[in-house]
Amino acid sequence: MGAAKLPIRRASPKVDISDSASPLSELSNDSTEKERRRAKIARASKPKVRTGCVTCKIRRVKCDEVKPSCNRCTSTGRTCDGYYIPPRKNRRIDHDAVIELSTTPERCLEVVAGTGEELRALEFFHARTAPNLSSYFDAGFWTRLVFQVSHVEPAIMHAMVAVGHLNQRRDVWTKPLPMLKSVFLVDDQPNVPGLSDRIVVGPTKRKVIDHDDPFALSQYNKAISLLSQRIRDPDAASEIALLACILFVCIEFLRGDVEPAFRHFKSGMGIAKASLTKSSLTKPTLTMELIREGMLPFFNRLEVLAMLFGQAPKHDYHITIDEAVPAHFSTMQDARDSIVHLSNIGLRFIRNMKKGRYARLVLPDDFVRQAVLEREVERWKEALDALILTDTVSLRDLDAAKVLRVHQIILTVWLGSCCHIADSYLDNFMADFEAGVTLGEEIQRNAATIEQRRTNQPSFLFDMELVSPLYYIAIKCRDPNIRRRAIALLRQTRRREGLWDSNMAAAIAERIAALEEVNLSTLDGSELPAEEDRVHNTEISTMVSENPHEHTLRYYSKAYGLDKEFKVWTERIVLEMDPGPNTRPELLY
Image (cartoon, rainbow, N blue to C red; front, side, top):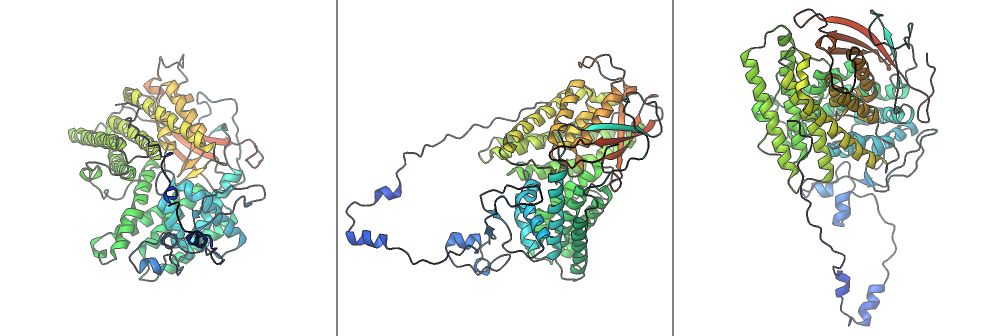
């Protein structure tokens, strides 16, 4: 436990093809003059048709260009791979923002009706948002499926416009600087140790850039209205509503609103589960497969996020612990889905133990269940290691595997410590904490080399990757050196993953570290905070509509003893951004 390195896969031997003979070199030298003249006869000049589907172009047949899938392909049982258009380079998106598009044709809708502002948002979604949302997984969903459905479903198109517009504004105006200032405002305990002299008291109003953006809200409302009309039809496909729910959640993530995001998630989860019940077996097989394999994994991951933000699950998880980890993984997607299942099952157990351990009600059966979960997490790690050693894994898959390993390490630590009341029990997992930070640093270094070849870094991801596990390490690892490495990584990440904002997470972790380390005589790692100085839990709430940079923190510690009541106090933390080349200047306090 705690090994940071992934298994080393031997590189396949490279074959030098530089000396391979070209088929053209085998033409006979005694070709007749007539044949040579015939070869030189120019083809009749006709305008090239660039609007057919990809499959028909490859087959060199005329495409009937029916959207979203042409009849020429579907009538013969083939899969229509959609339509390409060459992206326009250096199209000006905003007054001062220029987007560099790839010269490689990307999958996109061929013709879209809309206003100039709508088309600019769609272009941004196509060029930047969809590839970034895909991250290591889900490329087919964001770059292909969403576009195909939006061509025939106006609700999906307007939701895409809202997502693209909000993501564009976030990239252009609100890209965080490497470091942010933090101002702490104390609500009910002015003498909390560790506060700096920069205490501000009074109203903290700030102009909200993205939350109440009129254009985004207009598109969002159009999408909701059109979807409401669409689902009144009893024959309406449930996958349309599920896709809309995912996009609505994405909009609320960009706006930073927790409650509406989870309302959409719960609504979508209900639709997904109802669609997969036995009473729905009359649905076409392809529809069921799309829901099960294309949509439901999104809601499984959102369920993990909801529990991390304090939402209690209302039902048992639909996968049992015996089904969560297969004998082997065929793809990295299988490994990702499996660790999501383990996280959903494990977090339910951890939530139950959170109440039980403080009441001293952890039973022998609980320790048995804990051991079963830990064993399955170890089986998952072994299956991932076996997959990495195969020849089917790409370099991108290896980076994805590191992200999954970080999540597995955090789940291991959390499960291993959840039955113990003392927070100091976490000190037994220092090797795991360091392994997680080391993997995070490797991922960050590799990402930096990739971003150097790109104009802009992604500032928003739909799924959780590194921010949430690094935040856990930063608040639960009490070794000052490892903790500061985790905080530094959060500062460097500079993006939002779902509802996890890296700069907010770093600022809160720094504040918790200051509270816990106030009585330490050295920060070299030779001594750790005492149990009574440790923050056991932190509740975070944000009034996004008033000030998305202000967060109310409620801390819980066992300052009076493990068997005594919690010490509880509240602070407000306000993140200030300095004006810079990529930020809109605002009036600070």
